[in-house]
Amino acid sequence: MARKTVKPSAKPSVESCSPCGGTGEVSRTVRVGRKQRVVGQQAGLCLNCLGSGELPADD
Ligand SMILES: [Zn+2]
Image (spheres, rainbow, N blue to C red):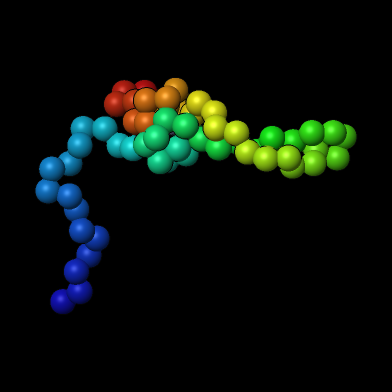
């Protein structure tokens, strides 16, 4: 019998934020010029969790 997805024994009350992976920061691409040339990446606050790295329990 194939095992299904392993669940953690102790499930946290909150889930990790998916856009930032629970770090609270996301790397955003920095673009410049009319052609929006990519010049690098910059760490920015995750707007999904506002830096907490966790999804809000209530919404
Ligand atoms: Zn986040």
